[in-house]
Image (tube, rainbow over all chains, first blue to last red; front, side):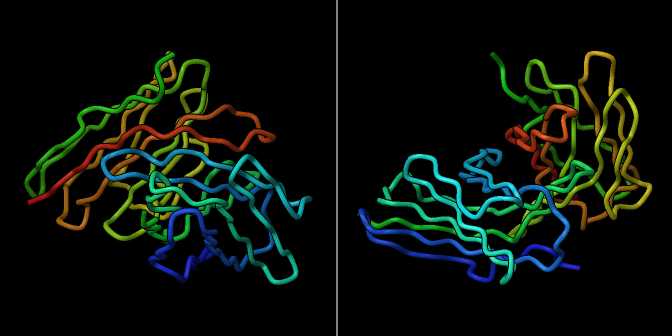
Length: 111
Length: 114
């Protein structure tokens, strides 16, 4: 039962342009969604979260949008930088305290 | 302020053997969760420990067991290793605070079963 899906395994973007990473979910019961970034040989690093009661959350170059009717969320990175190249995971956080991750999207930002 | 530390970073074991992985949570955190990340997949929740008790468990067999110590550090034990247990094992620490969802991850232990 894949509750969180990231359907794009990879994304390539030019430096300075917008990166849009997408995530779909199938179960409506959640408190938060979180986005993590992962470099090779490192653990995931928290980027930004959004509560189930919000539609948008912004932190610097990163903005997450939540569309509850479509059960879809997206992470926007503007402007994209080469250092943003990494694997991005969206994760659903339930009251039970565990994170349910998507499969990840590998972002490549070209100079 | 040390973040989440895991040991060892890499490990090679033979099928049928047992392995113990260790995790020290971020200072001030009281909850430890373990995740398994297979190649090309997202991390999968194994279990969570708080107050030295297993609080939640994912869909993993009983060969996977854990422990949390009074200083909040934790161990993950896997018995009767299978080739399919080869993965990156991640430890995450957090606060037992349901309004604070953020978990901090260690760098992981890469386990290879041959």
